[in-house]
Image 1 (cartoon, helix red, strand yellow):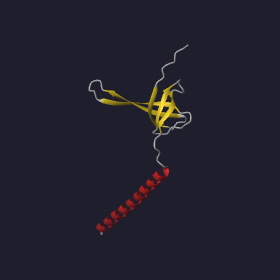
Image 2 (cartoon, rainbow, N blue to C red):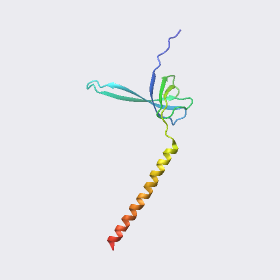
Image 3 (cartoon, rainbow, N blue to C red):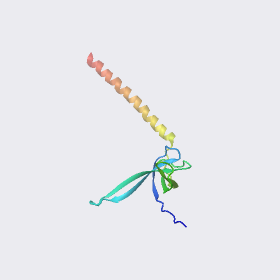
Image 4 (spheres, helix red, strand yellow):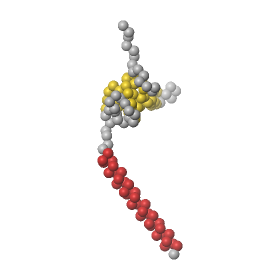
Length: 123
């Protein structure tokens, strides 16, 4: 009977979910500098297989090493540890619209004032 091979289990944050059935997970690790002793945060990005396309940006996930699925994909999703908080599109759209309306009105006011000042100086 053959012994089980060691499989790495990593935990990180999803930074991209734009590909079909693939997520990019950023795994951070802390390491002490060999000479100065300062703690340094190093990170690496892994592509992982997400069969159901259930992960979104910002989710905390656990991935496990597996056979190569593609050139870069050698991990698969095992568990979503914590879902990220989603911002509703409606409230965000309203905020963006209100800012755009304010910006549209303010340049027209400034432009008309500058034209009036030029005309009054020219006469």
